[in-house]
Picture 1 (tube, helix red, strand yellow):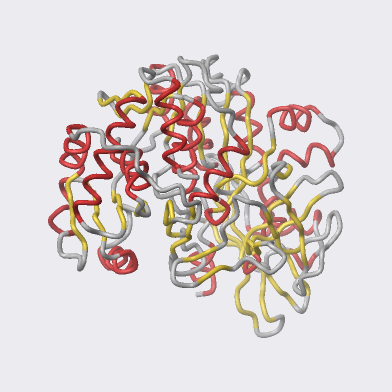
Picture 2 (cartoon, rainbow, N blue to C red):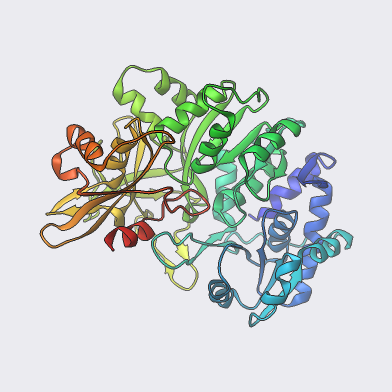
Length: 498
């Protein structure tokens, strides 16, 4: 099992079909296969242990990904938004490495110890110009395919280890080989250092779908590219989808009948946003995909029919499923457990545990977090209903403990978001002498709308127990999110605690 197996099958099955494009740059599947061989030669010649890319989405990403797999070296996509000090820390963990980057960053990154730096265009030119070597990649499933540094929303980033067996198991279990039509195209706007960016490449290649890269997300450019390239599939994070429907305008339709499928994930999707999106894209099937870096991407899916049934239902329990992340993939098992590791029943809140062949749960230099029974504790908090629909309620560490009572910040946020004046809300626990922790909230109001902190406190108190009512509410122009749509609670907690 090796990622190159996926590309080899695609290049043999549809060699001349478009594989990936970025602006005017385009590669067919045959050209991508050949370039991967060239990239493998570059990595081997450099004599390094890892091949890293620090760049926005470009052709260097898929070429580097498969070139690393061919050469038997881990591929490491790095966050181009990090500071020099943060990059130096990450580079030290993957040294010695070959680092591919944009021309403007070569100078500063060349100072990194045990790091050979190559400019992106030079890397691509050499990879495309080289003779295709013999197909001599290893088929050892335990070799490391990708190292992905976690987002660090609750602490310092650490490198999640994804071996070939994990990624291939995910693709084989969730994607039909050659399932895409020749005209199909996937618009990829998530950054390459996010697991969704990696899985989008792998799944599109195995399906035979053309990848259209959008290096820097902009809602208007996303819509233009989707129309111009006849995009059939796309993946977005919630903040992206919110900006897209805002760009379309209230009550208007996107005018993209060819966009058959949109998957979203990576953060909490507010119910008003997905409801507006379904109206703006009436011909599109929406899928909520929940997964983690440590699970090689998706482990649960809320499918198109689930969306339609929930949106049309008068049953509150069924309609609530629009805020769920759906049911587990057939190849995955999920349990909700309490703080002692005991399995909980339907509707009971606890920590989410997952088991399956695609689950890694391993970190570079730190070993595996997978338990003896094969389950991985995700550190995400949630619950499942009687039908197996999973509801995410933030990180387990985000639970607010007020006077011995455990509270989910997500539950309080959902109620705040139901207020007609509220556009966004973030809830955290802050230190309190009397109760241990107090509930605090930061709220973004909709343009032209008004509400006081007292108004919102009454709103929450009427719908939840009084203990869950925020003692303190601050109004903001925006909340702190990372680029993949996850609320940075540690940042918000620090701000509100002060």
